Amino acid sequence: MNRELIEDEGHRNRFKPISWLEQRMRGFLTGEYKAVVFKIDERPVAYALYLDEGNHIYLRQFFVCRDQRRRGISRESFETLKKRIWPRDKPVTVGVLIENRVGYAFWKAVGFKDYSMELEMPPPDDLGEAHHLD
Image 1: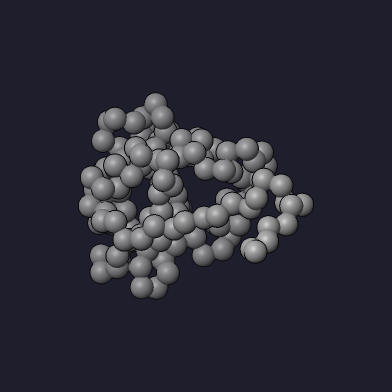
Image 2 (image 1 turned 60 degrees about the vertical axis):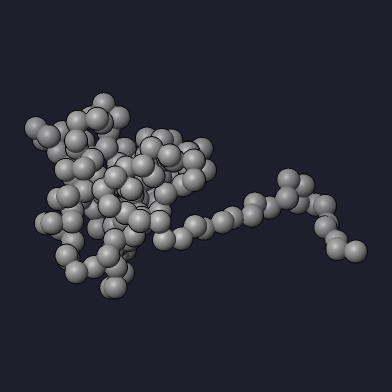
């Protein structure tokens, strides 16, 4: 599911091998992150990976299996997190990659508001070339 999430949102980690993703997820889960897996008839259909940072909940990953989308599972799963898993008195933050328009639209539809935008400057294509200001 994590691989599909990465592919769907257009994340640069989509080129990492499954073994790397497994190790990374183990690191999250042996650390302070918690995961919730949502099932239908014992089949996992969605998951959330989050961290309680004290003053807010950081939702790092949220995914619904591709063949289960457009059935209300995303909204129902998120409502379950808000009402039954997370403290009700804490705000929730989630990051959305710029190219992930579907994800952005979903988060807006369930009540998230724009708060900040993170920008990135990639390294130059030719790392050996020095750039000087004259």
